Image (cartoon, rainbow, N blue to C red; front, side):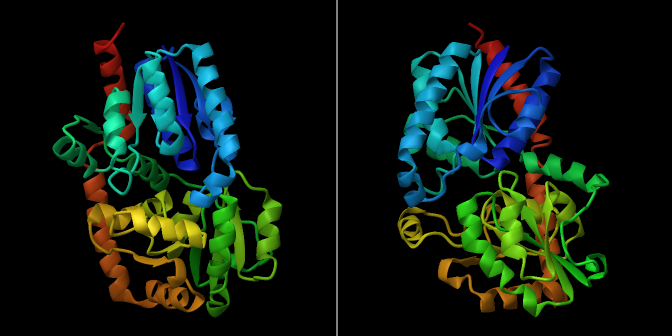
Length: 380
């Protein structure tokens, strides 16, 4: 069968690639035409657009790039029509993918959505159209199934969280760790701290300088930035040049987390990855003042990190916007590194989180089976 798969971010590329591999176990002859990244291409997809050309973050940033977004939408529709897939698989990335879903449904294309848009946080009215335009919804957070089924009377399928299987595999692997640093004594540092400032240039420029500002207060530690795959090394070389105990890693984020004693992490999927590696973390978020002011008015959730949302309690500290200062970050990092009671409590909470997310089994295989069953039942 022929599938057209769209993922617009690094996390979507990861989960999309694992889904594609699981689908090939079901159907070795499956063909994939993709919008995604290097991992989906390596899984056997024919790459049309890389996610680095699609990622715009924040209300202001999206408005500034509307012309490009509309061009991408038009091109995507033309390409799908030319390809004539048996099904369209959309991986997260709701601003773009929900528009494609509506169009595809009108064209009679079967629409499968893997990793639900976070409508439970904001824009709940989207669910009405989602029910109309999505034929199969596969959710990865345990609270999403009752949310859709009880509140919206829409049957969806919980398949487990795909990060659990990814990180279990990484933990069991001997991952190489080859950081880029001018510090020849990095391996003898008392502690290692991971800096995960995000994957988009504009968010890195806002968050990384604050993260770097605390490094001088921990000379016994070695800090490593997880380099975003779409950005040049020169971008990091320039930012890190004046910090002797800071280096970076390229495509080795999981190897970094395996050896880290603490982490400073931007909001998003990285918060959950860090927790599943059982690394004590502080969640850092800062956006443009306008984007933040708008978000604060319309977003309905208590927390910004997935860890806290899933556990429905404040497990990891969140420093948001004006709270993200050098002083606050220094205090939180010191606690994570040296307060045994805090580290013990986090370990306990992380164990509970893992158990909650493991209840669905292997998400990629579960999702692939649901897709195969759906297409068999709805064969035209």
